[in-house]
Amino acid sequence: MSRLLCPLLLAVLLLAVGCGRPFSPATPGSFTELKDPLDFDYRAVSADGVVLGIKAHKNEPKVDLAFAERAFEQQIRSNGYALLEKRDIRTSSGFPGKQFRMGHDEAKNPHLYYVTIFVTNDYVYVLEAGGAKEQMLRYEAPITWHIEHFQMK
Image 1: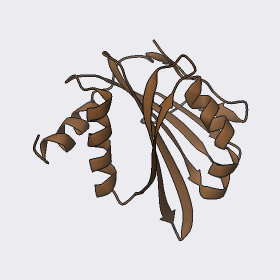
Image 2: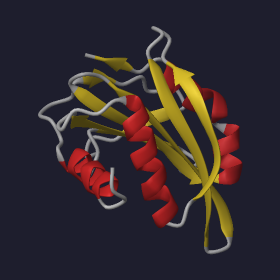
Image 3: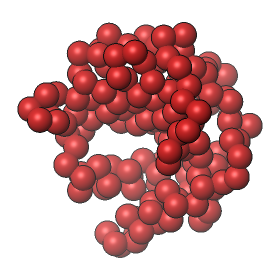
Image 4: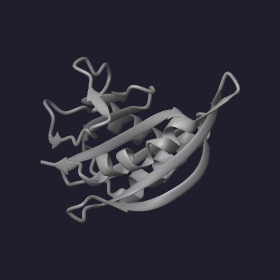
């Protein structure tokens, strides 16, 4: 597949938002869900400014997890994030996904940004967590719980 086609297909995926929420989010006790999630289908925040977000995109054109993984890696490289780690991940029901852990500096302050992708026949789910490095590390357990207890409909 050409180098131009992968980012183009990812852009189509990211713009093709489905109606309603085809998932049940798991909000950790240390977070509160925001009623106006802006460009997300779900968004929650901790008192320390760590933010969780979920987007559900129609899986059209149809892609699998391996394709979504490669396309996302192309995108983050062009957006200035440093890929720190990539790991396989599963929900508590055993559904497989891929997580990317990235870093970047904002005004010389280190920040971490985690993106977890799950792909079903109908949707591509993108779960995001981000904030200042110190807070992200402190909220590691609630972030992990949020991802493990995510339920796709």
